[in-house]
Amino acid sequence: MSDVTQRLEELTLGTRLRLEELIPRESLVDLTASYHELFGVPLKVFDGSGKLLAEAGPAPSLYVWLASLRGARAALEYVVDHVKQLDPGAGDVSYPCVTGASYRVSAIQYEGRRLGRVIFGPYLGAVPAEVPPELLLAEPDLDPARALALLAEMPRAREETITQVVAHLRRGLEIILFSGHKALLTSNMHLASVKESFKELQAKNQSLQEAFDRLKELDRLKSNFLATVSHELRTPLTSIIGYSEMLHEGLAGELTGEQRDFVGTIKEKGEQLLELIKGLLDLSKLESGTMSLRKSELSIAETLNEVGSTLAPAARKKNVALSVQVSAGLPRLWGDAERLRQVFLNLTENALKFTPVGGSVTLSATATELAATATEDEEDDDGAVFFAAKRPALQVRVTDTGIGIPEAERSKVFDAFYQVDGSSTREAGGTGLGLSIVKRLVDGHDGTISIESNEPQGTVFVITLPLQRAGQR
Ligand SMILES: Nc1ncnc2c1ncn2[C@@H]1O[C@H](COP(=O)(O)OP(=O)(O)OP(=O)(O)O)[C@@H](O)[C@H]1O
Ligand SMILES: [Mg+2]
Image (cartoon, rainbow, N blue to C red; front, side, top):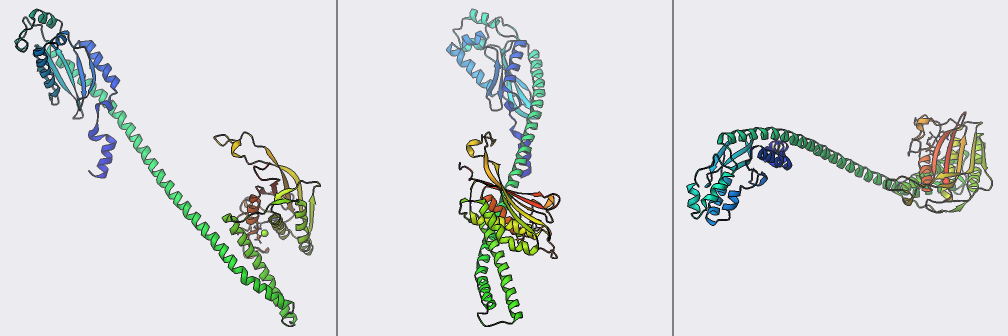
């Protein structure tokens, strides 16, 4: 069987139509009961494999009595066996019993397929005047008076009536089977289409997962590559800087003014390159999660003042007013002093870099609160947070009066190598690594960083750092 025909067979149920699937069992039981009530004749319904599905009407008293007599019981069993095996073809056939009664066997057909059979009987056409000779032959000692009395109690029907009843039942069943088949087909089609969409979804999921794994692997390779290259570049660069420093200081003999300038440039550019490489190394460590923060108690005032004095010469040179304003009595912070200095150094360098002559840059710190990241105990099954205490935190603002960052760029500047004006004619130097490192370091302290506008002009970087790590009270 080809794939398509097989699928079609499955959908349309092909040859596997079963009576029980098309008509609920209870409906069949009700139907047989109502036929028995109307015509008084017992009937039984069997499925295609001969299993009894429904029956109505008790066994006639004559048959109950005869079943207790040896000879008569054997004769009745013989009849019943034959009736059960009778093939009515596409229509119906009668079978006579030793009692003079009849059985009528009719096929249940649907779209040319045999789904089962109905057996009517036993019923009697007319009450006989004498005990039928076949019965006496089977049971010679039979009590004729009792037999005649019980024969008179038998369900009675004329053959034409039974023919009509059978035809009626067949038509009725056909209608029920048709609507049953339709319902079954519809639900099968529905099921098939659901299965199909599920399969498609699974396939898409799988390819997404594969793409994700591939990207993750690529990302890992990139981080490894960055780490290795930066590391390998650092050693020779340290030599270049060291030797140019020695030359610059005249350790290898006096230099002319021009030679000193050239060597000074080599040293300066070498140092820039070293900073860049350190940045790359930091980033790859942060991305691979291998950078460990050495946290201890620290004073934010100290950190910010250090940053302020480190960059004071640069600010003076550019004629930008740099100030540090820290509220008195701020609580101490739990963090990596070296890395936090790096964070604020980076932000302040940016602020100075993007603020024109005559502007100002301010570092300020105040106490605040941070919505706690809920621990698992505080979440219910759906992840809803019932109890999320605020955690004490410090807020540091790095404010400048510079060129500002447009709203649409604010989420992008934290990406590695992203610069708002990426053109080669851009005045400000740098590579676009600073903020991506800053963001990751702030994350590493469970803090948040965001960008606001400084009215009427400039940018404010707002960093909120919890005093303690999540879970620590
Ligand atoms: N205070 C600021 N004012 C205006 N634009 C800023 C400010 N800080 C950052 N930006 C914008 O965000 C970009 C990314 O900053 P980031 O510090 O990551 O890189 P960079 O300063 O260009 O280079 P690097 O820090 O690696 O030397 C900057 O190039 C600039 O366009
Ligand atoms: Mg920068």
